[in-house]
Length: 125
Image (tube, rainbow, N blue to C red; front, side):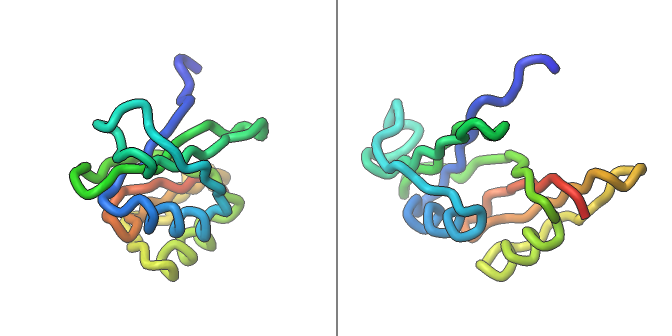
């Protein structure tokens, strides 16, 4: 592979709401602080997510009232349909899928979170 993804950002107008949503959905824990620049997130609103050592990547969730919503990352999950259903149950909206690769062992889906950010899921079934 060429240059790997090493960080992700999910930016929205209500960072606390997004921290709560993704914490509940994926079990993420945030270390809230300041982003490198106020152009990325309002001070004290950027939640850092440690990717750990299990093939995860580091990322951040932040923003504020004057920030545009933006993101597209794929989150690895054991069962895409289960994660997609849970995302919907927490206020997300299904956009795509699940769609299986021709060989059937890889599945993707898209949903929007409560702020309208587009998120991808990747895994099996």
